[in-house]
Amino acid sequence: MERRSFLKNAGVGLAAGTVAMPAIAQSAPTIKWRLASSFPKSLDTIYGGAEVMAARVAEATGGKFQIQVFAGGEIVPGPAVFDAVKDNTVEMAHTASYYFFGKDPTYAFDCTIPFGMNNRQTDAWMRYGNGGKLLGAFYGKSNIVPIPCGNTGTQMGGWFRKEIKTVADIHGLKIRIGGFAGEVLTKLGAVPQQIPGGDIYPSLEKGTIDAAEWVGPYDDQKLGFNKVAKYYYYPGWWEGGPQLSVYVNSAKYAELPKEYKAILHMACADAHVDMMAKYDAKNPIALKQLVGSGTQLRQFPKAVMDASYKAAMEVYAETSAKNAEFKKIYDDYKKFMADEVLWFRIAEGSYSNYLATLK
Ligand code: CA
Image (cartoon, rainbow, N blue to C red):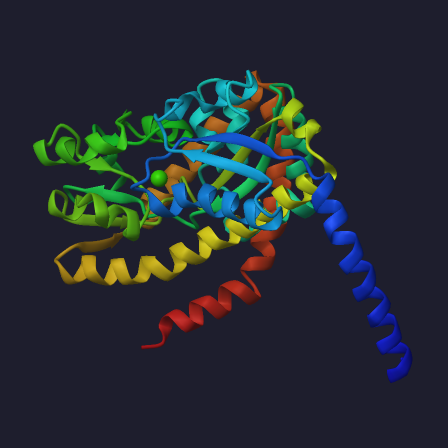
């Protein structure tokens, strides 16, 4: 393009923008929504994802679309946010969908399943596979529009008072873990315990439980688990890339002007990336501090991983046999994942593995 015509066109664009913007702002309604988080403020990275999203929405609408974030329990108990959004008690929630495993294990796909996809693979399935479409339809039955808003990346396997050297060491193990992972470990003889975050430390300290999983170095360090359990295992095969989600009541979502819908999706997408970046920046520092203070890092033995994988596949076969909706989404998920693993082992995997060998 010639310089003159470029400047002329740029000038036209600028003039149109200057005129149009106040017109949109004037017609934009003032909306105030409440968001119930499932998380405590102490989990600043996960809880903070909703605050990042809400701040972006407010900035982009000149303060006209305000989303007030409430921590778990402030207006809705953490596990009750699903029904609160479904029934429009609150317009929005920020949560991890596997909390609703008890209602229907199919909900877990919006977060993760044991031996499921990592963060990037999940994004690929949600955006360019059938994930977003399938989950949108499934959650739609409960008047919920789910929007991805954060991921922790692969979590740690957690804190163990004793070493796990063989599959037999899992037998009788009282471990704080829930959902699908609990079912998988039950097959190996473990005794899963459902314990809220705040009660894990005293339970580990007293030896009421033998092990506990939480998130990763940054969050685990804050709860001080290293003081009451020596061995820190990896990887958390039940959480290879758990996604956090914003849930929006579907009637409320439908009422939003289309510009606000676009802004909401962009704000969630930005908070999604921001959460992963924050964890990736903070986890290595915390891990070094934990190891420096005496924590013993251990990788789950291959035999333990293999037995757990086999048990997970049995659980999926059993669940698929009795739950058609689960089967439909799982079949799609599994097929997509097979291609992702095939691709990731080539460039990404070999590159990461090589870098890891360097001193
Ligand atoms: Ca976890």
